[in-house]
Length: 190
Ligand code: GAR
Image (cartoon, rainbow, N blue to C red; front, side, top):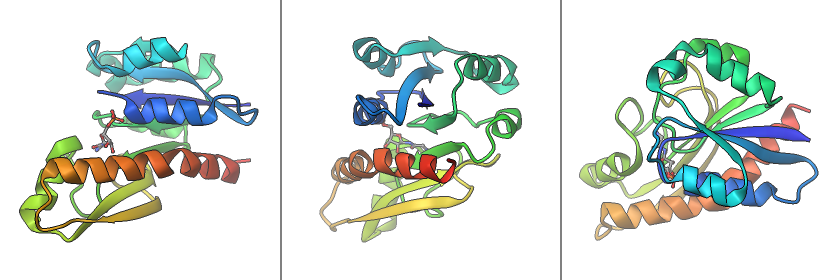
């Protein structure tokens, strides 16, 4: 059984969707959730789902050692960033090479980088007058929103769309695709 850890900073709707996708699977399971904010709603979801969760500070995360130890003690094979806003330190990337995946709510390389998360991204799409947006699922490296892209899916952006409209189209794509793309990446590691 492959063990997945999810790192999240906020609501955690993707975390819950991924956990539910693997529920009952004999191939992989979400067994650990790390949040960097004690008020993140993902912690409520973890409780409800019966998944162990911890809160870490920004400094702990940056130092990486205790995070790596937590992951290794739990025999985590793969790490998923689902709405996680801190930069992943090099040490953690080296401990899980090619085994940390992120989802970005736009078509990278457009609208990526520091500060580009959640609604900020959708507001930028509106401001640029883009006619499409979407999701990018990519392996991570030491820069925000870079690393090998594994999967993209697009949605249309209408001239009348608000950033909230775009957010809901993008969330729909995330729920549809992120879990099965994680499963596909896991299979490449077999
Ligand atoms: C998701 O849309 C995800 O793509 C985005 O944060 C949202 C989290 O929603 N991630 C980023 O912006 C990373 N740069 P959720 O907490 O409900 O899953």
